[in-house]
Length: 201
Ligand code: ATP
Ligand code: AMP
Ligand code: MG
Image 1 (tube, rainbow, N blue to C red):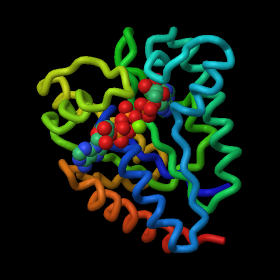
Image 2 (image 1 turned 120 degrees about the vertical axis):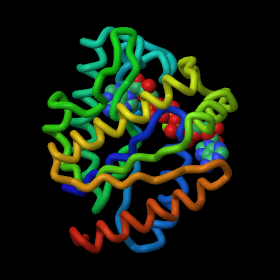
Image 3 (image 1 turned 135 degrees about the vertical axis):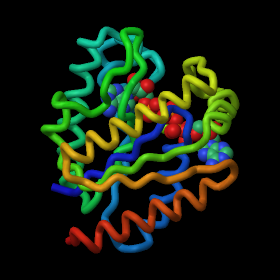
Image 4 (image 1 turned 90 degrees about the horizontal axis):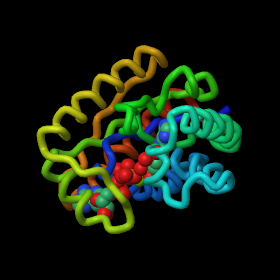
């Protein structure tokens, strides 16, 4: 089974942007790296079941439905990880549901995933707000700087908890305005080090 790397961060912080850039750098190293977006795997199943038509509708489903989609996705991701030395999983440590913050990784799905590294992509509340507003492909929740500050803190608490549960290091990657390439380089360097540490085929 390949090593799973969790790439997390608040919605709109730039996870997908940074991870896409880092993939090109990692592939040039001869490491068999894969990339999967957890939400996309859930969305395929949710669409087949006729539950939603857009990824941003999933967090409004009943928690019981999200739990089932989340569990199915973990099993698929676990199977996929067998094809790689390293599989990057673009996901969230919590999802804002109408019932409150719900964990993206918990006993429901962690049992299927062999996690080797946790990455948290971060930016300031002002930067996140600006990115959410400029991205017209998404239906993002309204937020203000104060609530984002609390969400950043909560995300850090979850990262620390996940670190204890998995015995994995957590690396924080700042993704400042116009500096996605620099963030990708930092991610690439951490993952190269991780591969040297755990070895690859
Ligand atoms: P989600 O969790 O909702 O999928 P995300 O964390 O994957 O969000 P992205 O979709 O990668 O976020 O980025 C959100 C928006 O911010 C996009 O329009 C992207 O182009 C922009 N963006 C990402 N990183 C930067 C950066 N360093 N500077 C400026 N804009 C950025
Ligand atoms: P994203 O494109 O990364 O924002 O993901 C889209 C949606 O997928 C999120 O808003 C959540 O509804 C769902 N999602 C992503 N990762 C997880 C996860 N680990 N657990 C549950 N739902 C998730
Ligand atoms: Mg994304």
